[in-house]
Image 1 (tube, rainbow, N blue to C red):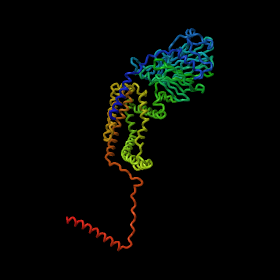
Image 2 (cartoon, helix red, strand yellow; image 1 turned 45 degrees about the horizontal axis):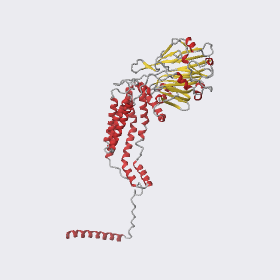
Image 3 (tube, helix red, strand yellow; image 1 turned 180 degrees about the vertical axis):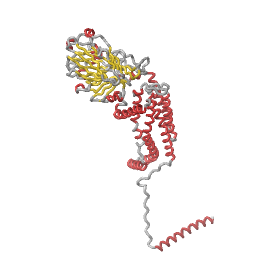
Image 4 (cartoon, rainbow, N blue to C red; image 1 turned 60 degrees about the vertical axis):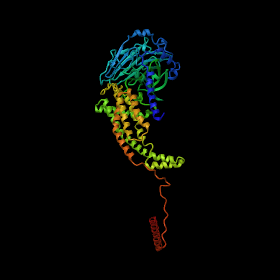
Length: 620
C-alpha cells in the first residue's frame, strides 16, 4: 500500500471514529433536576472538621429532623412550633435587569430571572431563569457546635413584606429577613441589598446568642436549562473557585464521581454553565471575613450536575458580609468585580491561559468597542473583525512567506553540503554556517512570524465560541450567532474557501509532493464537517478571514512563481578554494636584447611548426 492510499485510509478511519462514536455513544440527555437528599449532604459534612477548619468537637450528620438535633444546645424551638409561627410567603424584588423571588422559609432565592436575556428552551417563554423549578439557588445551613441547623426550616418575617421594585438609576434598597426564637436567646437577620443596574446582591448575616458559628452557603444544584441544545448546556455545568494559594480551579460535574472537600481560603466560588452563573464572594470589610473558608462539592447521581456549598465563619462580632452574583458571563461586568472573576469560564488550556488572558481582554474590548462606536450589529462586527485581523496579520504572513522562498531556494545547496561532508561533522558545520551567512538562510524565519499570531487564533476560537454578546443575535439568514447554522451554508463556505486557499498555493508549486496535493482535497471537507455544529458566529469569522486572505494568497503565489523562474543558487566556494592560487612573479630579463631575441626566435619556431602542419595536409 503506497503512501497516498495510507493517508486517505487514515483520514477515512478518523471520520469513521468521529461519526461512529456519536452513533454508538450518544451524549446523555439531561434528566429533570431532582431535589437532593439533605441527609446525603449532611453525611459528607461530617468530615468537615479537618478540611474546612470547623472546631474540634466536629459536625454531626444532619439528623432526620432537619431543624436541630439538640434543641437545648441552640435554644431553637421544635420544627412544628417554628412552622406555626410564620406562614409561608413569597417575596419578589424586581429591577430593570432582574426579578428575584424569595421564600421566607430560609430567606432563600427560589427564582432568579434575567430580564435582558430570552429563554430559548423548547416550550419555554419569557426571560432566562437561573433556578431550576422546585429548587433553591441560595440557601444556608448553620453549624453550631455539634449540631447543624437548616435555615430552610425557619420561617422569617420580611420587611418590606410586599417586596421591592427598583427604578433605573435609583438608589440601592434592602430586604430584611428576621427570626427570633420564643425565649429570645437566639436570633438571625439576613439583610439583602439590591442595586437597580447591577447583578450583584450584598448580603449581611447577623447572628445573636451563639459564638462563632460556621455558615454554609449553597449555590444550589445547578442552573436551569435555557438553551435550545440542553445536552450541550448540561455538559458545561461546572464549579469554579479562585483559591488564595492555588489560583483558579474548575471541574465539570460530568467528570466528578464522588463528593470533594476543598481547602480554602477562597476569593470566590461559582456555579456556571456556558453563558450564566451564580457566585458567592466574601465581604469587603474586615480581614476576618475577607475570604471564604472552603468548598464542599457533591455530585448528584445520574445527573450532569451537583451541589456546591461554600463555608464562612461568622466572627465574634456576630456579623459577616458576603456578596452574590446572579447574572450573565459578561466580561466587563465580571472583570469589575476583581480577583480575576472574569476567568470564571477560563479560555483555553490551563498551561496557555497566562498568555491568552491579555489577548482575550484586548479582543473582547475591541469587539464591544466596534459594536458601540459604529452602532452596528454583532454580525457585521464579526465581518469587520475578520477583515481587520487579516490586515493586521498581513505583514507577518508576508514576511513568513518570503522567508520560506529563501529557505526553499537554499535547500538543494544544503542537501549537497550534507551529502558531501556527511563523514566530516566539523567541516559540515563550518560549511553550513557559511551557507547561512552567504544566503541569509534562517530555518526559523518561515515559522516564527506564523507562530506569533497563533495565540491570537486560539483566543479568537474560545472567545467567539462562548461570548454571551452573540447569544440570540440574528444575522442575515442566521437566527442565532451562538448556535449552529441551520442551513450549513457557513461550514460549506468555510470548506470551499480553505480549498481555494490551498489550490492557489499549490498551483505555484509544481514540485509539491503528492501528500500535500492529497491534503488539498481531503482537509477542506474534513474541516467543514468538524465545524458543522460550531457556533455560527465562529464560522462566520473564519469564513470572512479566509476570504480576506485570498488576495494575499494570490500575491504570494505570483511571487513564488517569480522565485521559481530564477536560476538556481550555486554552491559558494569553501574557504580553502574560494581564492585561486597565486601565480609566481616572473623575474625581469637581465638583458633586453637577449630577451627580445628569445621572443623573436620563439615566434619563428612557432610559425615554422604551423607551416609544416599545413604542408603536411597538402601532401596528403
